[in-house]
Amino acid sequence: MYCKFIAVASLAVFTVTAAAQMPDKPLSRPKITGISHIAIYSSDPAATDHYYREIVGAAKLPDPENPKGIRYALSATQFIEVLPLPEGAGINRLDHTAWNTDDAESLRRYLDGKSWKVPGQVERGADGSRWFTVKDPEGNKVEFVQPPAQPKPVVDPDVVGRHIIHVGFLVHSRAVEDTFYRDLLGFRPYWFGGMQDTKIDWVSQQTPDGHDWLEYMLTSGPSGSGIPATMSQHTLGVLDHLSIGEDSVPQAYKVLEAGNRLTGTHDDKPKIGKDGKYQFNLYDPDGIRLELMNFHASEKPCCSPFTADDPAE
Image (cartoon, rainbow, N blue to C red; front, top):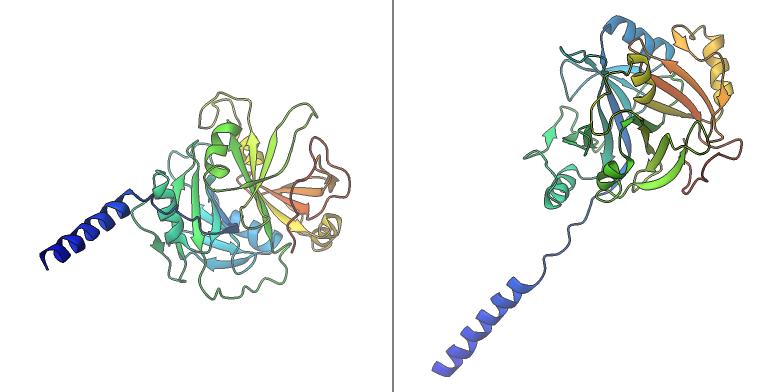
Protein backbone atom coordinates (compact mmCIF):
# COMPACT_ATOMS: atom_id res chain seq x y z
CA MET A 1 0.00 0.00 0.00
CA TYR A 2 2.83 2.37 0.87
CA CYS A 3 4.51 1.77 -2.50
CA LYS A 4 1.22 2.34 -4.29
CA PHE A 5 0.80 5.67 -2.48
CA ILE A 6 4.31 6.75 -3.49
CA ALA A 7 3.59 5.84 -7.11
CA VAL A 8 0.34 7.81 -7.16
CA ALA A 9 1.98 10.81 -5.50
CA SER A 10 4.87 10.71 -7.95
CA LEU A 11 2.47 10.58 -10.88
CA ALA A 12 0.58 13.58 -9.51
CA VAL A 13 3.81 15.57 -9.13
CA PHE A 14 4.90 14.61 -12.62
CA THR A 15 1.52 15.65 -14.08
CA VAL A 16 1.60 19.06 -12.35
CA THR A 17 5.22 19.62 -13.37
CA ALA A 18 4.57 18.63 -16.97
CA ALA A 19 1.52 20.89 -17.15
CA ALA A 20 3.56 23.79 -15.79
CA GLN A 21 6.17 23.21 -18.47
CA MET A 22 3.68 23.07 -21.32
CA PRO A 23 3.50 26.30 -23.34
CA ASP A 24 0.35 28.38 -22.99
CA LYS A 25 -2.17 27.99 -25.77
CA PRO A 26 -1.74 30.89 -28.21
CA LEU A 27 -4.38 33.58 -27.87
CA SER A 28 -6.84 33.60 -30.74
CA ARG A 29 -7.87 36.96 -32.20
CA PRO A 30 -11.62 37.40 -32.65
CA LYS A 31 -12.83 38.54 -36.04
CA ILE A 32 -12.56 42.19 -37.11
CA THR A 33 -15.16 42.36 -39.83
CA GLY A 34 -15.31 45.95 -41.04
CA ILE A 35 -15.89 49.58 -40.18
CA SER A 36 -18.27 50.49 -37.39
CA HIS A 37 -18.02 54.29 -37.50
CA ILE A 38 -15.93 57.40 -37.47
CA ALA A 39 -16.34 59.88 -34.61
CA ILE A 40 -15.81 63.56 -35.33
CA TYR A 41 -16.19 66.92 -33.58
CA SER A 42 -18.57 69.70 -34.57
CA SER A 43 -18.18 73.40 -33.81
CA ASP A 44 -21.64 74.16 -35.28
CA PRO A 45 -24.16 71.41 -34.42
CA ALA A 46 -26.99 72.94 -36.49
CA ALA A 47 -24.87 73.19 -39.64
CA THR A 48 -23.48 69.70 -39.08
CA ASP A 49 -27.00 68.31 -38.60
CA HIS A 50 -28.12 69.87 -41.89
CA TYR A 51 -25.13 68.41 -43.69
CA TYR A 52 -25.50 64.81 -42.50
CA ARG A 53 -29.30 64.69 -42.62
CA GLU A 54 -30.18 66.80 -45.66
CA ILE A 55 -27.12 66.36 -47.90
CA VAL A 56 -25.81 62.92 -46.95
CA GLY A 57 -29.32 61.70 -46.08
CA ALA A 58 -28.35 59.79 -42.93
CA ALA A 59 -30.81 58.96 -40.15
CA LYS A 60 -30.38 61.01 -36.97
CA LEU A 61 -30.30 58.81 -33.86
CA PRO A 62 -29.35 59.13 -30.18
CA ASP A 63 -25.85 58.00 -29.23
CA PRO A 64 -25.79 54.97 -26.87
CA GLU A 65 -22.06 55.53 -26.24
CA ASN A 66 -22.15 59.21 -25.33
CA PRO A 67 -25.24 61.17 -24.23
CA LYS A 68 -23.66 64.35 -25.64
CA GLY A 69 -23.22 62.77 -29.06
CA ILE A 70 -25.46 62.11 -32.06
CA ARG A 71 -25.34 59.28 -34.55
CA TYR A 72 -25.98 59.80 -38.24
CA ALA A 73 -26.63 56.25 -39.41
CA LEU A 74 -26.18 54.87 -42.90
CA SER A 75 -27.17 51.34 -41.88
CA ALA A 76 -27.88 49.30 -38.76
CA THR A 77 -24.16 48.85 -38.04
CA GLN A 78 -22.41 51.85 -39.66
CA PHE A 79 -22.67 55.52 -38.77
CA ILE A 80 -20.95 58.85 -38.24
CA GLU A 81 -20.76 59.82 -34.57
CA VAL A 82 -20.78 63.60 -34.02
CA LEU A 83 -19.48 64.95 -30.70
CA PRO A 84 -19.28 68.49 -29.29
CA LEU A 85 -15.99 70.23 -30.01
CA PRO A 86 -13.91 70.01 -26.82
CA GLU A 87 -11.87 72.90 -25.49
CA GLY A 88 -8.32 72.92 -26.77
CA ALA A 89 -9.09 70.82 -29.85
CA GLY A 90 -7.33 73.31 -32.12
CA ILE A 91 -7.78 72.28 -35.75
CA ASN A 92 -8.41 68.63 -34.91
CA ARG A 93 -11.91 67.36 -35.75
CA LEU A 94 -11.30 63.60 -35.46
CA ASP A 95 -11.99 61.81 -32.18
CA HIS A 96 -11.62 58.17 -33.22
CA THR A 97 -12.16 55.50 -35.84
CA ALA A 98 -14.00 52.28 -34.95
CA TRP A 99 -14.12 48.70 -36.22
CA ASN A 100 -16.72 45.98 -35.78
CA THR A 101 -15.73 42.75 -34.05
CA ASP A 102 -17.70 39.63 -33.19
CA ASP A 103 -16.40 39.58 -29.59
CA ALA A 104 -15.21 42.79 -27.94
CA GLU A 105 -14.20 41.21 -24.63
CA SER A 106 -12.14 38.47 -26.26
CA LEU A 107 -10.43 41.04 -28.46
CA ARG A 108 -9.66 43.17 -25.41
CA ARG A 109 -8.09 40.14 -23.71
CA TYR A 110 -6.22 39.24 -26.89
CA LEU A 111 -4.60 42.69 -27.03
CA ASP A 112 -3.88 42.57 -23.32
CA GLY A 113 -2.17 39.22 -23.82
CA LYS A 114 -0.02 40.83 -26.51
CA SER A 115 1.06 43.49 -23.97
CA TRP A 116 -0.98 46.27 -25.60
CA LYS A 117 -2.43 48.81 -23.19
CA VAL A 118 -6.17 48.19 -22.87
CA PRO A 119 -8.90 49.28 -20.43
CA GLY A 120 -9.82 46.97 -17.58
CA GLN A 121 -13.18 46.05 -19.10
CA VAL A 122 -15.45 46.63 -22.06
CA GLU A 123 -18.17 49.26 -21.95
CA ARG A 124 -21.83 48.55 -22.65
CA GLY A 125 -24.32 50.72 -24.50
CA ALA A 126 -28.07 51.06 -24.02
CA ASP A 127 -28.53 49.39 -27.42
CA GLY A 128 -26.72 46.22 -26.29
CA SER A 129 -23.42 47.04 -28.00
CA ARG A 130 -20.07 46.50 -26.31
CA TRP A 131 -16.84 48.31 -27.00
CA PHE A 132 -13.43 49.36 -25.77
CA THR A 133 -10.91 51.98 -26.86
CA VAL A 134 -7.13 51.86 -27.26
CA LYS A 135 -4.51 54.04 -28.91
CA ASP A 136 -2.45 52.99 -31.91
CA PRO A 137 1.35 53.54 -31.99
CA GLU A 138 1.00 57.19 -33.07
CA GLY A 139 -1.61 57.97 -30.42
CA ASN A 140 -4.74 57.79 -32.58
CA LYS A 141 -7.81 56.56 -30.69
CA VAL A 142 -9.20 53.29 -32.06
CA GLU A 143 -12.41 51.67 -30.90
CA PHE A 144 -13.55 48.08 -31.34
CA VAL A 145 -17.31 47.55 -31.27
CA GLN A 146 -19.39 44.43 -30.88
CA PRO A 147 -22.76 45.45 -32.38
CA PRO A 148 -26.05 44.47 -30.71
CA ALA A 149 -27.16 40.90 -31.36
CA GLN A 150 -30.17 42.24 -33.27
CA PRO A 151 -29.39 45.75 -34.58
CA LYS A 152 -32.45 47.87 -35.25
CA PRO A 153 -33.11 48.64 -38.94
CA VAL A 154 -32.40 52.22 -40.01
CA VAL A 155 -34.89 54.26 -42.05
CA ASP A 156 -32.96 56.60 -44.35
CA PRO A 157 -34.57 56.47 -47.82
CA ASP A 158 -32.56 59.43 -49.15
CA VAL A 159 -29.13 58.36 -47.92
CA VAL A 160 -26.43 58.79 -50.56
CA GLY A 161 -24.97 55.36 -49.75
CA ARG A 162 -25.22 52.70 -47.06
CA HIS A 163 -21.70 51.32 -46.81
CA ILE A 164 -18.67 53.09 -45.33
CA ILE A 165 -15.93 51.27 -47.23
CA HIS A 166 -12.93 53.03 -45.74
CA VAL A 167 -11.74 55.60 -43.24
CA GLY A 168 -8.42 57.42 -43.27
CA PHE A 169 -6.34 59.64 -41.06
CA LEU A 170 -2.98 61.36 -40.78
CA VAL A 171 -0.07 58.93 -40.38
CA HIS A 172 3.59 59.80 -39.95
CA SER A 173 5.20 56.36 -40.21
CA ARG A 174 3.81 53.47 -42.21
CA ALA A 175 6.25 51.06 -40.54
CA VAL A 176 5.33 52.13 -37.02
CA GLU A 177 1.58 51.89 -37.63
CA ASP A 178 2.01 48.49 -39.29
CA THR A 179 3.25 47.05 -35.99
CA PHE A 180 -0.29 47.47 -34.67
CA TYR A 181 -2.65 47.19 -37.61
CA ARG A 182 -0.83 44.53 -39.61
CA ASP A 183 1.44 42.62 -37.22
CA LEU A 184 -0.89 42.56 -34.21
CA LEU A 185 -4.39 42.82 -35.69
CA GLY A 186 -3.87 41.18 -39.07
CA PHE A 187 -4.98 43.96 -41.44
CA ARG A 188 -4.08 43.02 -45.03
CA PRO A 189 -2.58 45.04 -47.91
CA TYR A 190 -5.08 46.28 -50.51
CA TRP A 191 -3.49 49.12 -52.50
CA PHE A 192 -0.99 51.97 -52.23
CA GLY A 193 -0.33 55.03 -54.36
CA GLY A 194 0.44 58.70 -54.49
CA MET A 195 -0.05 61.94 -56.38
CA GLN A 196 3.15 61.04 -58.24
CA ASP A 197 3.88 57.49 -59.32
CA THR A 198 7.24 57.52 -57.53
CA LYS A 199 5.92 58.69 -54.13
CA ILE A 200 3.63 56.84 -51.71
CA ASP A 201 1.01 59.08 -50.11
CA TRP A 202 -1.74 56.57 -49.35
CA VAL A 203 -1.58 53.01 -48.03
CA SER A 204 -4.76 50.95 -47.85
CA GLN A 205 -5.05 48.03 -45.41
CA GLN A 206 -8.16 45.85 -45.38
CA THR A 207 -9.71 44.44 -42.22
CA PRO A 208 -8.61 40.88 -41.41
CA ASP A 209 -12.09 39.39 -41.88
CA GLY A 210 -13.75 41.72 -44.38
CA HIS A 211 -13.06 44.12 -47.23
CA ASP A 212 -13.47 47.55 -45.64
CA TRP A 213 -10.15 49.29 -45.25
CA LEU A 214 -8.05 51.76 -43.33
CA GLU A 215 -6.13 54.34 -45.37
CA TYR A 216 -2.87 55.70 -44.02
CA MET A 217 -2.72 59.33 -45.15
CA LEU A 218 1.04 59.77 -45.02
CA THR A 219 2.38 63.22 -44.22
CA SER A 220 5.85 64.50 -44.99
CA GLY A 221 5.76 66.63 -41.82
CA PRO A 222 7.87 66.07 -38.71
CA SER A 223 8.35 62.49 -37.62
CA GLY A 224 6.58 61.16 -34.54
CA SER A 225 2.95 61.67 -33.68
CA GLY A 226 0.64 64.65 -33.54
CA ILE A 227 -0.54 67.26 -36.02
CA PRO A 228 2.26 69.28 -37.68
CA ALA A 229 2.20 72.91 -36.50
CA THR A 230 2.15 74.16 -40.09
CA MET A 231 -0.87 72.08 -41.16
CA SER A 232 -4.16 73.89 -41.87
CA GLN A 233 -7.57 72.68 -40.75
CA HIS A 234 -8.57 72.16 -44.38
CA THR A 235 -5.55 69.96 -45.09
CA LEU A 236 -6.15 67.93 -41.94
CA GLY A 237 -9.80 67.49 -42.95
CA VAL A 238 -8.69 66.11 -46.30
CA LEU A 239 -6.56 63.51 -44.51
CA ASP A 240 -9.06 62.62 -41.76
CA HIS A 241 -11.95 61.30 -43.82
CA LEU A 242 -14.53 58.62 -44.54
CA SER A 243 -15.62 57.07 -47.80
CA ILE A 244 -19.05 55.80 -48.83
CA GLY A 245 -19.17 53.13 -51.51
CA GLU A 246 -21.22 53.58 -54.69
CA ASP A 247 -22.10 51.42 -57.67
CA SER A 248 -21.80 54.63 -59.72
CA VAL A 249 -20.43 57.88 -58.33
CA PRO A 250 -21.58 59.84 -61.43
CA GLN A 251 -25.14 58.60 -60.83
CA ALA A 252 -24.97 59.47 -57.12
CA TYR A 253 -23.75 62.93 -58.09
CA LYS A 254 -26.75 63.37 -60.39
CA VAL A 255 -29.11 62.41 -57.54
CA LEU A 256 -27.52 64.99 -55.23
CA GLU A 257 -27.60 67.62 -57.97
CA ALA A 258 -31.24 66.96 -58.91
CA GLY A 259 -32.27 67.18 -55.25
CA ASN A 260 -30.52 70.53 -54.75
CA ARG A 261 -28.36 68.83 -52.12
CA LEU A 262 -25.02 70.11 -53.38
CA THR A 263 -24.65 73.03 -51.00
CA GLY A 264 -21.58 73.86 -48.99
CA THR A 265 -18.09 72.79 -50.04
CA HIS A 266 -17.56 70.01 -52.58
CA ASP A 267 -15.74 69.12 -55.79
CA ASP A 268 -17.00 70.55 -59.07
CA LYS A 269 -17.77 67.11 -60.47
CA PRO A 270 -16.84 63.43 -60.15
CA LYS A 271 -13.41 62.34 -61.32
CA ILE A 272 -11.35 59.17 -61.53
CA GLY A 273 -8.70 58.93 -58.83
CA LYS A 274 -5.23 57.44 -58.93
CA ASP A 275 -6.70 54.09 -57.90
CA GLY A 276 -8.82 54.02 -61.06
CA LYS A 277 -12.10 54.50 -59.17
CA TYR A 278 -14.62 57.29 -59.66
CA GLN A 279 -14.81 59.61 -56.66
CA PHE A 280 -16.51 62.80 -55.52
CA ASN A 281 -15.56 64.75 -52.41
CA LEU A 282 -17.84 66.71 -50.07
CA TYR A 283 -16.82 68.47 -46.85
CA ASP A 284 -18.79 68.89 -43.66
CA PRO A 285 -18.97 72.34 -42.00
CA ASP A 286 -15.76 71.63 -40.04
CA GLY A 287 -13.86 70.35 -43.07
CA ILE A 288 -14.02 66.57 -42.61
CA ARG A 289 -13.97 65.04 -46.09
CA LEU A 290 -16.60 62.57 -47.21
CA GLU A 291 -15.51 60.74 -50.34
CA LEU A 292 -18.06 59.01 -52.52
CA MET A 293 -16.14 56.20 -54.23
CA ASN A 294 -17.03 53.48 -56.68
CA PHE A 295 -16.78 49.96 -55.29
CA HIS A 296 -14.79 48.92 -58.35
CA ALA A 297 -12.17 50.57 -60.56
CA SER A 298 -13.04 51.88 -64.02
CA GLU A 299 -9.40 52.16 -65.06
CA LYS A 300 -6.10 50.48 -64.22
CA PRO A 301 -4.77 51.93 -60.96
CA CYS A 302 -1.43 53.66 -60.75
CA CYS A 303 1.43 52.67 -58.50
CA SER A 304 0.29 49.19 -57.41
CA PRO A 305 -2.32 46.58 -58.26
CA PHE A 306 -5.20 45.72 -55.93
CA THR A 307 -4.17 42.72 -53.85
CA ALA A 308 -7.57 41.77 -52.37
CA ASP A 309 -11.24 41.73 -53.39
CA ASP A 310 -13.16 45.02 -53.41
CA PRO A 311 -15.90 45.65 -50.87
CA ALA A 312 -19.49 45.51 -52.11
CA GLU A 313 -22.90 46.92 -51.13
